[in-house]
Image (cartoon, rainbow over all chains, first blue to last red; front, side, top):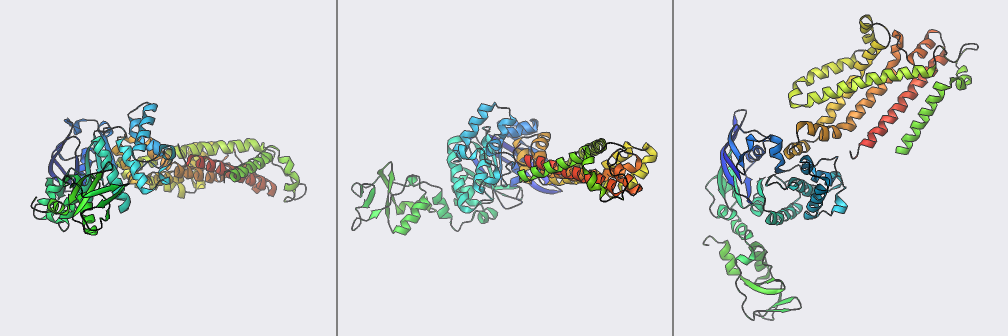
Length: 330
Length: 243
């Protein structure tokens, strides 16, 4: 649990962060979003005291961050930055083992942890452990950067534009990998980003910041459905809000029990017996998003699609239910 | 690359050792540049002894110049030392622009003849390359790397010792190499104020119109510079990776 109370920072008279307060419960991913210079990075860097606040308090698990020795504080907080900042003279394994080494773990424990993390991030230890950062692609470097931040099992992870420097495809892949890891590990994460899509994809709650203050803090869905007038409305971007809302929900949220006799499964081929000539259809997975489902519905010109899990048709999804899920009258 | 540098080093060392230990072997060759009947081999002092003192002088001055240059470079790249950068630059630039011979002229009246004034002149002359390369090397460490190191919980001294200096080491070593080979040549002027070294042979040759003396002194100095340059290069390459 991170409690931020009345945090304030001024640079040369200009207020960068202005009496900001927020609580992040254990296991939550909070995204701080806003334009450049809104104070989101400054806020993040005050949590691990890379910047010392002028006023206010940060409590981590009830302990006042300003009362702890600064190195001690940082050892307990994972930190990922946009530039990655891997140590170029150290191997991948040495990079990932940085904080455990600083904490004087014994050798065997460090090695085991490094191997575990490399596997978790899909970097085969036999191949990657002895490589140097210059031999890695951008996406691989960023994975090592996140693995390094998680190495000593910090209760808190701070991420500043962690996937900002990557191409869109790699970025999306790393985001979903990170989301999957977070579902299992349940770290308390504060994520700074200017990319609203990234915030929607990863965050449990989103705080929209401007001029050093939080204008609105809400779950992604509530932010989309009820953005405050002014900056929030403009920044959240409402042109495709229905689709964004849909992307927040898995198919299982809107599926209903399958109509008996509607679908036939034969050797992996699913046919829609409710339509003329019983055409072959590709079933949805329960974990697909409603946004993906909507796209399929439009493309296939269907009003009902089967949902297949564990090799059987477990439910079906009606177009009308998808439209309702993304509509204002929910 | 390494085998070729290794071969060059072996040749330079072999040539140096042969000329310094057995100059007589080269007497027929050296006689070609002298008038008949003139002495060909410098015999007032064994060449190997002069070479040894030459090396001691350069090494001692190099150690001081390197230590001071690196410490100064570290100091001015710390947040608190930034204000001293201009001053430190001025001092080290002065050391380089002030001709060593002028330093000798100033220091001899104070510290007397011999080793001491030459040592001081070489320290001053060798400081700039080390200092400037230390500053450049430390500045070259990327900002995200330093930010990550701090954010990860490394103390400032740990960052310096485990991140900054190892990353700056190749550039700093280049500075030390430059400083050292410049000083191997420059140290010859020490003989004008009585420092024992290879300059003595050259100066004796100049004073008595003996080209063979000049040649053997100059060749020994050159071979010493080449050998040490190659050694430091190999050391630098060995360190470029890992650590």
